[in-house]
Length: 628
Image (cartoon, rainbow, N blue to C red; front, side, top):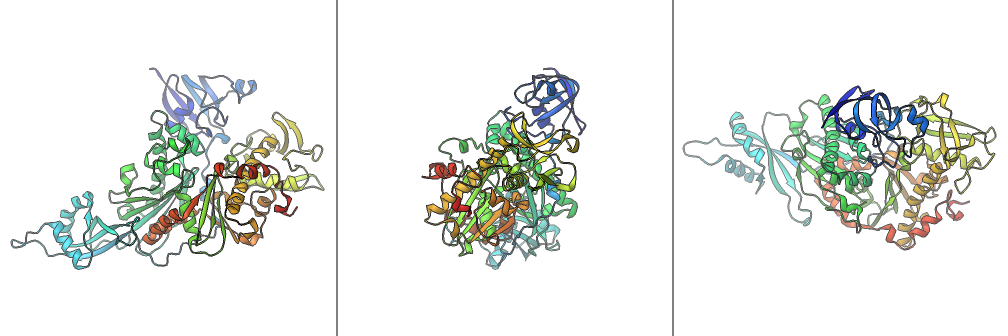
């Protein structure tokens, strides 16, 4: 088949592409990101590119006007290669990772009372072989370990291959690294040891573990020193899987295509490897001394990372292939680490309450608190846990992408140019924008959407039904999708187009917040309690970093409780993974939490749909819940 060069600007990357191949597939193959919320199904209209030279086979379609098409605008998923072409990826279609360089104000707790990492190092001095003592090297090692009461250790093949050379180079004075597999099904049994590495006793004492949070939007990593307990600063990057869809369902669908699973797995592996490379710049050679990877992710992300088809997660009765995972040699998956690095993946509770939530509950310390606590991780798939040290219930709410800027006409992620704060002055009928990095506005992020709707509701511009009040503001006008509110005109915006919020956007937000709030209600009332009985509300995840609590309560996303009951703990999934990397006790506690959490499938729970429908107002149809 004939191939043609396709050049993508501003990256200035040229990729050879076959006739008929979609521009989105070409870009993905070249690791060039183009926003595609739906994974290339052609139903989101977000993968906009500008044709600068050449030609591609395409038609205007549903999301482009004739004017757009004539000006060179194309949808990458619907445009096919039919000759050489040069395309420009506009700002709204690109990924911006600068978000990952910002500090958080989270109350993160990384205290481990009794550090007991799953890998421990022991120095032994062996008697060298002689004509009268021809015992094998491995028997000699095991005999020395037995004298230290370290019995019955298995050995990795990679360590066995290194053993003869290291023993002789170090004059039989060696440091042995032993990985202790925890008998999780029988916690009364002693951990089972496996030798994973040999080093000379002269090697440095520091050795490391790596905590990883594999999120749908981003991947975070943190290096910990297992010898000292020191925790290094975390690093994050956009999960390259976003090129195949912004939510788990679209990625499951993509994984079902030819070579889809392999591609989407490689995208996550490549992202983690980039983070590993960045640590190498700070701490050269650390990989040779890294023995544990503690990984937390939602159920779908865990399957995609390991390379197991998750298609049954989205098919009734919604059963994942696995909820617990064996220890995995990390290098086997393509991660750029040594053969002795063992990957431990957090267990899931259900198809939509995953290991990231187990890790989050571990980080939040619910298992040791008597206070009745609501734990929330808000995202495309919002997860909630209610309970304390004695019991826990959990559920997943299909909130949709609104909290991450998706499903919003001018929506975007929290990146430079995103409107995240908003103030409305009813007397003057004016508003003021707070924009990330104080640059020209490009769009609206999730927290900005909440703040805008809350302020306009309080200012009388938006009513309880989420509709604009006619003549309430000069910025309310009729747009192509119905009534809208002008936030920033084109001549003051980065993308040369008006930035607006529409009634459809508000409707999407109301559906999303309603899914979350009705989830809280259902779990609380299922155990015979009321919202006011909640003593703590813990908010986790990147979304919470700029969340205005009063505004979130105003629109009905959070329960109407005193503000001092709320705490933001940041990326609790990464925190939990860090605790488990530092401590085998914490890892065992994670499995206990999985068993302790009772999952509710909300769609099958009596009363949930009634509560959901009642929540489709601002803030709610039940005024008593919000003191209205």
